[in-house]
Amino acid sequence: MDVGAYLHLAVSLVLGLGSDAVVFGGLVLVALAIAFFLGRDHIPALIAGSYAAGLIYVAFPYASILMGDAYLSLAFFLVLTALASVGFSGMSSFFASGMGLLSTFVLCVLAAGLVASSILAHIGEVQAIYTPSALGLMLFAGQAYFWWLVTPIVGLVFFGRG
Image 1 (cartoon, rainbow, N blue to C red):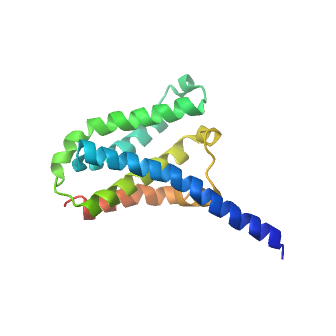
Image 2: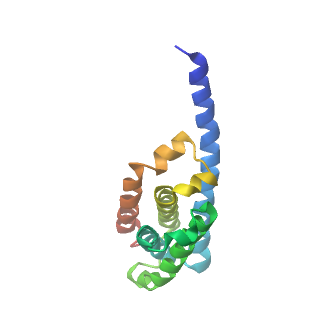
């Protein structure tokens, strides 16, 4: 039994959790800012826009324009997310505007998780900018991507109706 290897793994998980929490927390704060400055009913539009941005990014026929640059790819995905969210903002009339604080927070966390997971799933070059820890990859990449695709829909069903 190599105690040093276990200690190294434990320390890297703890340090990685801190850096991943800062990135994920930043995404949650952006979603909360959208909710409180533009209105809570814009969060369903952000979730729908994240789905659309992922589909458009994958099917984008002119990917060579991005030249494999991590910053350009990330900026392009975030612009697609913002534009699609604006496009879906009319959808907010289907949801109750009286969502409570807890519902808003839960939907913001789910929206941030969907965006983070989509970035890790679709933009391979992003690891040149930020390399998530093993725990971050376990929570947002691989098979976890499926769950981040499903949970925002379930969250909208339970928390989106106010």
